[in-house]
Length: 380
Ligand code: DNO
Ligand code: MN
Image (cartoon, rainbow, N blue to C red; front, side):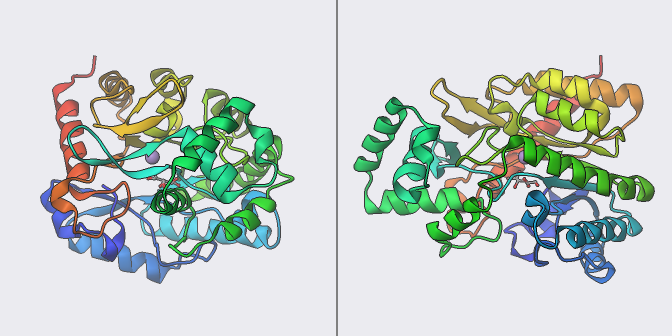
């Protein structure tokens, strides 16, 4: 289970009581790019161990923007990344999640969309997103990314917005900016976008491979496993290149880096938001490289809208997916750490501070359902 540190609504004691043995966390207080020192790693590790669990997975050891752009001090940042990997391995922490999404991590347009049951869920609405891009952010050159129909539709949507709608949409989209706060402005975002103007998909791919070529030997040497998280959503947003969205993207990465120390965080919700992604096929093809599992579900619609649904109820064939995972685990003896990704916010927890997407009841419900499914399935 993911634990956001002291600021998480769930304490380590809560998690222990829910039957959890392995914790997924990060040193959230350390600025992106700085070395994770043995002392800081130890503090968090012992806290978790004192509560009767282990720190099993790092999510995330973030990759600095300068590494993605190969600008400024990127070489020094790569060296520091290697030191952090080694420091983590020295304390028995080997599974390292990261992503290579420029500027924005995950993106949604609604953080509090009410489902039929009244729970608040995360949703991505492409028309709203275009309205944000064209009329709120006013990204230069955005029109070129859309057709006339899409622009008109987005305009009408924008014209129907209240001040409050605009504020909510802006906050929802920009929350995916690591370290962003409510006062992060659209100007800040535009400045960052400008720095990517010469980086297309091919360039970003080249940068990813160069980064992996540099860090994989260290990972191999210290025994750690790198798990790249797919793009969420799995397509380009705001004209930014996204290169970990579909099967062919994985083919490219893994054919360039032979070592299986370089692997995947198999996130069914992220990959599952792209109708072209056949989740079982992706797992089968890259199972040797799957070092971490994020299990969650999505429901998607023809216009490109998707929302996060119950863990066992959506377009992700969770039962088949888990069956394949279990067969693989049974035949190899390999254990892959899993966490229930995300969860709904339920009315009962309205007043508690929480991380968007990481509600209290929703996460525990997801965990319980997935563990039940696992127990009910036999390797075949
Ligand atoms: C969102 C998460 C992502 C993920 C990072 C991994 O809920 O799945 O923020 O942690 O992309 O690097
Ligand atoms: Mn995920």
